[in-house]
Image (tube, rainbow, N blue to C red):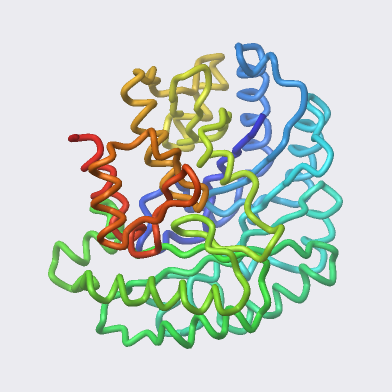
Length: 368
């Protein structure tokens, strides 16, 4: 009972991005909504989606969903909620760039049902924003936050990227302090990953950039954890921290292994014990739907072993951890001795030092 809608349009591709996006000066909002609702209708006929009675979370990600025309966004959300009512207290999140926020847009988003906004801040350093190919300015961030709050959307999450190349001389501590001064409800932290297909990947291939060292990555992650906890945030998942009562419900569904439906180009779903994913390119996805075809590119049923490993990985991502019985006792003993985990009752959860080693620790469980 969780729905993700991928809106692919962006004004520019960020230097680190290899997502399924479509750079457009003019966003074909009406065409997108028509195609998305066509896919929605197709998928609602299928089990187990046909058994859903309400939506508990609805997340518009991208891309840049805030670039959709407000009336088109309203039409999309009206139709989705008419077909499948929102549960009481349902979380409806819109990802937005600071430069897309205006009083008129906020009013339209709120009236359409949006009650949470995830704002792509990434940094408060003008030179870093330029290097990232971000389209907003530093001054637009506090202005956007003020307009959102004044317009009645006060559940705000801010994204930050850490572990940038040393030659940028980015002051991570100052970025954290400026972010906390804005009093957000939620902060998402992402270590910079250099994907081969991104502009940054091409810079790396030409020797124009040197990735951050592992030591720098760890130091900045630990500094973020220290500042967030000191400011009263719960660092409840590897990359996410929230004030009490403001955890991201949609993302939390992913981490508990809940089923979810994704619509839009490149969107992923997990339903009936199988993963599926859509055609990645906007044009191909739209064309498939216009011709009455299936916009999915492929699907993969998960074996029992895959489900077990995924359960371990997802559980260890959060402060909820896992029942100790799901892990080899020798592995648990090693983690406890090294300070990578702690035992809380009958559960094992990773420490922040353990989170830094999450992939390696899960790989060790897989091989044991």
